[in-house]
Length: 392
Image (cartoon, rainbow, N blue to C red; front, side):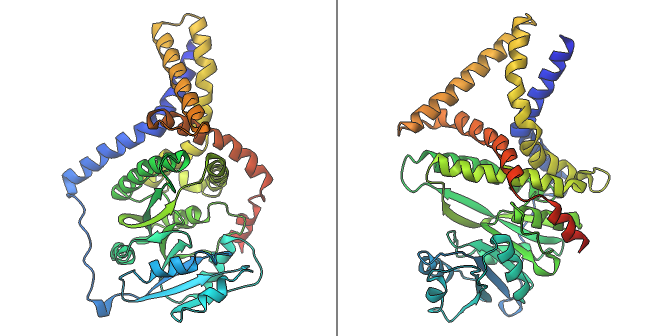
């Protein structure tokens, strides 16, 4: 019984730490840091004539329906030294024809479609500006976004800047988008705190910027190219800055089927990234980076979902073995949690919503997709391409 109790409490501690405890610990560490070093202040920008040239690079595949909307948004950006580049590899619709109407746009095109990672490699091999901001065709940026990103680059230790992601529903009551929005609000808070402590743990492709000279071409089978790309720079001793003053706005998933496909791919990419970036988890190389990476990313994408699943049978066995009233209480709480998740699922399937019930459902939904991601990864190309790329 002692062994079962130890395993049970380890699993429970892992679940608590991964989803709540790390955030609490981050908050405490940041307050202690501010106590000694003060609250970080925004960097001052140089005069306009000394501002660096910046490339805004948009990777797109068959996006003819969004070109005009995206360009209207791009022309609202206030940064004075901005070059706009579209990488449209493989596009066979009228995307390039629509872009031809805009004389301020450079189009980089290859008729072969090899995926977004290959398009990134192609585009970054063609642009000449040192600072490159990457975004998607279907995400809209706030007017001050590039200015705020450049402000972060005033720190020479910053190799990558991650912007914030704002998720909105296409219509009121769209459960998938609302759940995704809640998740990103919490995730954005953790990223902001990570960045203040030392470095954000990865950047999302909706809005991230890099120093081009530090970019390493990515293997084309990368599932989370933006995450691996940015973490490789941290591995070199640089930082990822996070700014909520530069944000990308996009619609959330139309429904949970679409969201499930996206989460499954992210989960598979997370597992792939853990293997590719395994050297960064060595606490003797960069202790603080290893702590942040494991706490924020690795646990969530690997053992914590397994620990969450194990809590059910372990708790049942301990209840039947009459291990104590505490285990009975925890088992009742587990039953209530899973019941709430089921009710959230049932309401969503019947076109109704309850935000309180949807939170446990979305939480379980994300964790279940980690297991689906394991299966997805098996069907994806093996990661040997990364090792070949490093050797090359």
